[in-house]
Image 1 (cartoon, helix red, strand yellow):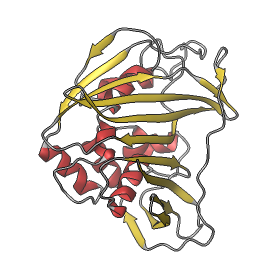
Image 2 (cartoon, one colour):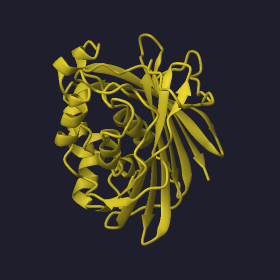
Image 3 (cartoon, one colour):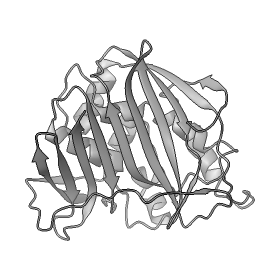
Image 4 (spheres, helix red, strand yellow):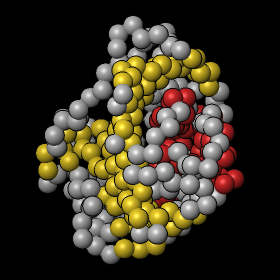
Length: 292
């Protein structure tokens, strides 16, 4: 975890509006220089998995509605606490502009609608990498004291150098096979950004506002990376009790837009998926599901 510090309780579905306002203020002149400091605390969020909320999420990502909860929905339980930690005045980097580059989720047993999940959320120390500075959001999920999942979400502050940050090791990279043929085409409207924001709580302006997206250098709004990953997981529909789900984010998917989907490297242990540009052949998101 991100250090020895106090635990505090917070609603998992707290409003992100005030938190994003703090993030925007962090972009204004007068913010201190980047530092290697991270808040040395863990936020604890308890959430009863409401069947209506889960089914709304499943509908947006084209997932079958069942009594078990997808890892993509469980990911959202740590979002508000993680945003609170990354907008803490003690966090050494501005959160807006940071890029979600990798996600590693380990499901230890199925989690069911109606269960109460405790998510304990903290930050790793900052790491210096070749193209900036990285931090991991660490989430431990449990039900009645029983561990049910762990997750590490890696964010990159591109081009930011932080004095005192330890050197990080290069992450293993997934690759999409050359000439991969799409088995499905997804035609995504601009409204998918606000729709996913409503069911996930992630109202990052680049996903919901064209003006904000252009201010950050995009032609238009872009799809949430976790929306794309969630839809790829749903399309594969794995029926596994315990597994590792690894996600690697690549080029942004501009909205409205069309994406190709395909599976590859399927074997007895698991399978990989790609969501990619059908015209350019470049990946937006690559994933791997592996049995535990």
